[in-house]
Amino acid sequence: MCAAAGMQGVLRVTGNPGGAIHLTDGRVTAIETPGAPSPEVLLLRSQRVTEAGWDAAFAAAAASGHRMSAELIARQLVGSGELEALLRTALADAMFVLASGTVEDYRAEPGPVDVVLPLEPGAEPDELLAESSRRLRVVASLPVRSYRDQLVALADATWPGVGLGGVGFGGGQDEIMALADGRRNARDLAFALGRGVYATMLQLARMQQAGLLETAAPRVPGPARREAGRPAPGDQPQAAAWLPRRQRDLPASPRRARIPSLALELRAPLGLLRPRSDRHADSGETS
Amino acid sequence: MTEDKLLAEMQGLRDRIAGITGTAVASRDGLIIRQDTGDVDPDNLAALTAAALALAQRMAREVGQGTLREAVTRSSGGYVAIYAIGAAAVLVLLGDEGLDIARLHRESRSAVEAIETLLA
Image 1 (cartoon, each protein chain N blue to C red):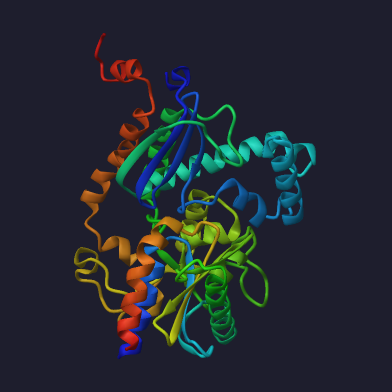
Image 2: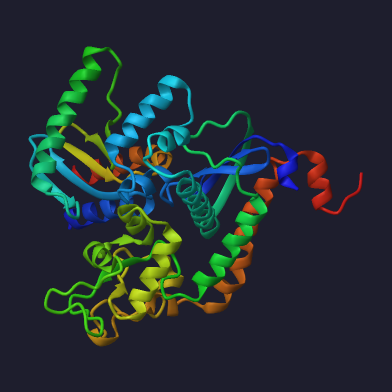
């Protein structure tokens, strides 16, 4: 429905993390948010594209007026299929992060879209929101439920058969073990690794369940409801320290009840960029 | 005690603004006062920060653009933002590529004032 609407513009979402959703022809072509790595970060940090290659393609695209995506593909820095998959992954990840956070305000700015690497044609907003809702439900069942939880590697962590005597953990886990210093949350780790936040959260959850990581104790006392009844760090025996105590302290029901509404918070703002007739059709009105 | 409040203020900035990976407060002569820099060497950072602030302030004066608000270095892997704390100290923030610049601009001034009060 949105695809036929032909709307073009930017939806600026204020909140935490907030961001900008770019739409062309009613489809989402890019989402910029401090909460999730951009396609540029995914390409460069993962070393799929070298910095020199990126810079050369960027300069050539700027000089010629060609699209950055066309330059990257023409220079064989990335395949067209791989690039499209990466752009779709980045979009789904950014929408998930926006839906995980809070929306304080939003503003629609119809007009031309100017982003470095748009997905063309873009993704259906409804499909992105549905996928975000699915991911939020998955994340609700994980020990790492928030991308803001900071994680720390356990010094004596051993996977059965690995992690001892210099044998690596494999599967990209060594990098995470080195980076999980209690200062970084899932978002920070995703940026450092050049991976999606959602994928990082799933991996962190597996590692946490395996006893390799624990949720770091918050440094500064947070809101009272989060801290109620929480023992001081160090009060508990080490063996149980990796258990996701922080989440268990939260009353479960209000959080669960809130999850479906989070993605919905973005549904209304996205509707702003649809033409009026489309909005009426959505709300069941006939005109 | 003041130093603990200072560290709490710096860590609070890292908690509130997505993408901040480290913070430090140094004296204008480049000696570290308080650091929360993670993997980055705080002493080298303090020395470079003091020098960079002095250079940026001279640049702003030379070109007649008024008071320096911040000195920002943007690299392929992130940001370094430097702020004067009164006449005697300097705040440096390190950020990754996703640093929330908009929130940084909104919150940096009050953070600078809070740190200046703590150092007074």
